[in-house]
Figure 1 (tube, rainbow, N blue to C red):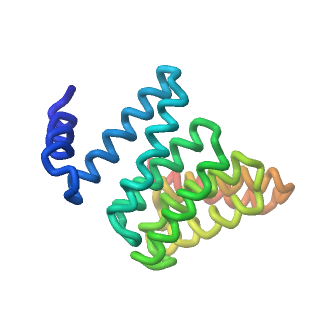
Figure 2 (cartoon, rainbow, N blue to C red; figure 1 turned 120 degrees about the vertical axis):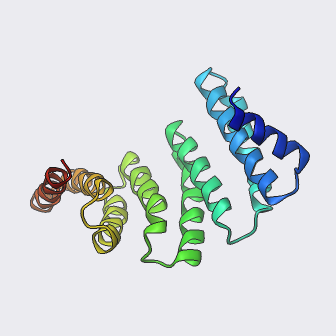
Length: 184
């Protein structure tokens, strides 16, 4: 066990009801759930993640740390193929981030991307296009020549292709390629 994990365990046990203690416990439990899942203990992993939602609520209704936990939970459910369980925390995280940072701030990027990937995985391509388009507009405005924008445009292009909107997909792919060339 590394020093960071030891420190997190100590903080979570010494100050269980403090903001930092709650945050560390949520992070540690998430790591444990991923480990349990990787070992094939699916039910235990899901129980651990699901059981921490009330704990995350103690961080506050509109709290960025709560949004972080919701993103982790949504990602966990998505990675494990539990798409129906993934959507609610993903949407909640986005709502919290929009309230804190605004609807056009790069701080909502992770939440938009997670929703886009979730919709794409479910074949809900119109909704995926909406999320990736919104994300690409935010990134173009705030950080126009980044790897994140190139990835977002590739995701957008994939969803557009599945909707037989190949001309728009090619435009997105060409823009992503141009960004990558500039970054090399």
